[in-house]
Length: 137
Image (cartoon, rainbow, N blue to C red):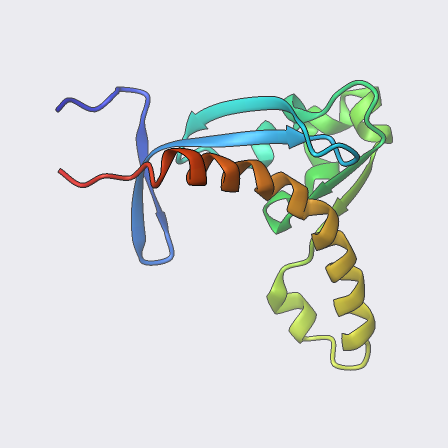
């Protein structure tokens, strides 16, 4: 079996992954997917964020992989993207360092995660419908 030339490999933790990654944009109200970008596995999530935002979006809830999105050149150059409110989850290691406001910070992150969970739901449907898409040869 010959691998596609556009597929790449990337290391996450101690594990190597080979293939593609799907970046999706989901409507927060309905939970329907409105944008899909497929890239090689070594492309970062933050580099595809501008392609997943619609013109009528005012808020964007993202995981900690999008930290620093508001400072990126493609966001600051676009008037619509720079006027959006980016609600990015904090990394767990930064929350552990805040002992005094730990419960308040956890409740804020929990509310962010409840909105972001709608993005993970389409991936669950695909995995249940088609089964695990990884295979060893």
